[in-house]
Length: 212
Image (cartoon, rainbow, N blue to C red):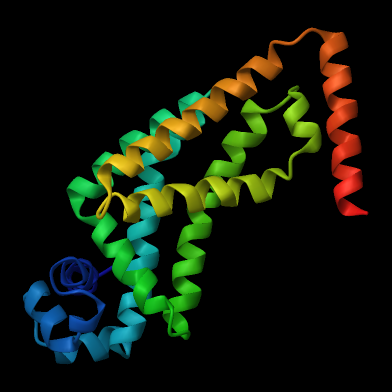
């Protein structure tokens, strides 16, 4: 990638942090990148296409930075610990603000909606890998929709990141509640074989009754 294209990607991210989606124009992005605004259209075609590229590239960098840590997770509580660290780093880097702006812009449909969804899927895929690994052999894995659970975890963290801006104490309580659920799963895993079979049977019956 040329230096100019990378500067435009960085300028787009900086503009979202500093001016929001409403202030993301060719002029403001070019000013943040330190280049002529005509280069926005030369390299990316439109402001929207530049924002789409910046969304994808920025997420790939952040997911890559956490891939090794996620690969070392061995429990749900470990996943939450990584989530806490991720949240702190993303907030300090200003990426939580960028996420909020991308989500706001994505509500209108179009390319930004699709690219934001794809960017979030990059995180969800990594979380699903972790969940499949840590839930192997657990009764939970036999009844849980793991892909759906991965999306629920991803949505929970996104919500907490945005929620903290208006209610920090509430966000902390929500995180503590998630940790309590992780402890509950550990307790289930520690049950003996008889109790696990009984629990599995009970949950399976409840799930079948709910579907009927």
